[in-house]
Length: 369
Picture (cartoon, rainbow, N blue to C red):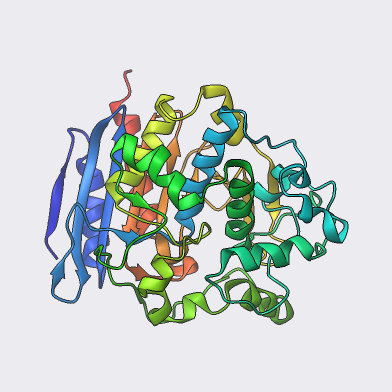
């Protein structure tokens, strides 16, 4: 497989690691690293669809990488004084107080401790308003703030409604107005049907929740994901990409996801104290449903015991189903993104991890003695 792009001096080992990733891939892959507005690594290879070469500008569905974009919008709204993590959700969304949730905080929603991992009635996945209303009426599975469990889909419904109550606008509109347009980022929460996006496919043996062995809790997982990752047709549909699903529906390029996190580090998007607040520990522990180690800020994933963000102690960002990895290493000052259209199971996928390991070595070698 031919690899395209370039790396800066000292990052040749990252190129070698990418060559190996590309050689083992059946679809397309891209890896970007940006520091202080400078591209250190820009590589891509493979196919965006059968017979269609992957390019630097190939967009892909980001799945839960979307949550990092949404967390950034929420941090920007926090910086503008429109929302606060210590405020009660019901202050902005009075109906949410039902079901014993009057004291639930915004931080409980953003740090995945609110206890609403699925929607109780069987509602259409793409209807943000109906799902948010159902969640507002539900009682949580546990006292909010006492357990952490990944809210795979409901994070998006809750965040979308919170933002609408605070601003009167949709999250897709705000992603465009606050991030994409002013900073020339090819990131979308609403992607029109005529905008090209890489075709997704599942590698043989693909599955979710690879840490989970309990079959009873696996039924909860099935309610959480609603079969989304089981259906290639749904994942690739214009309806999915156009539904403004704030948990999993954004599209973007590796280059612009890396730039997003570089902009966050630079202070161009939010003041440093707001970023520090959003990227400190708000929850951590073993997922009460999935048995996976978790570590969250306010919507961002943080460095965890299983090395999701590479061999570093401090990191933030958000991974995506099937292998996507997007984030920042504050100590090294870099933003990075790995994108792919080939979904692999977490317990057998070492693509992003191998690239981040090579990046860590290259950065250490470039540090002054």
